[in-house]
Length: 328
Image (tube, rainbow, N blue to C red):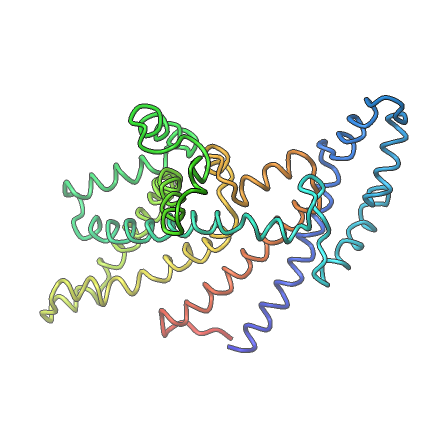
């Protein structure tokens, strides 16, 4: 196991190196330029320098006058020491800005993730054990609706019903206007209330895939020979499903759940933007559209790191869930 983990970590470091290089190259090639936008604003002021001269000065100040590879290795040399620079549009260290917004996204994603597991896996199992019944058809329709609906469409419907018509929750934001006048418990409840619609949106649009995946794998296991043998021996059906069948569906489920680690910290860009939740998804969207290379680089490399970590955790959990799996 130790050798396996060491090999995977070294391989992951190499992959992260090339991924970060590609991301930096793409960032430098994007048409959205923070320098050009700032130079344009500065050149419009009275007595300002010409636009081309300002662009050259700002490129030199931000290190964009160097070739792409040289600029990347300068960034990499600082990054390995934990120095990711200062955000150009937020005017504070990248890590500081990241730490101030990541927990909104984490709370949102964690709530949706737990609801997804609680809803999808049991319904997938029930659908498989009652194949071609009314319950199976109802679960299938529910799953297909969740898979088919885009998040922006479902979020708009929720806001129209619960915010505009019923006025149960605010249309935008993470807190209400009276937030500062509340006590500690009141502030938490106020933020939780503003999270309701975003959490429902993320849960509905993601629950269908896991539900269908669980049903498909459960049906395959229930038709296996050892399940028929267990039933022939008189093992109770509940034990056949929960102990024999479900455990053997964990391998493919772990594969899906392992890929959700980036989602917990990566933010939901569309949902956060629609509800104006100041999380990492909404913040990274602002940084990307305004050409903030330091913040975007940190965010994208962080997501790549989480993806590699999630895959490693999933591989280790395979051996935990199934004793037949061995890692070498």
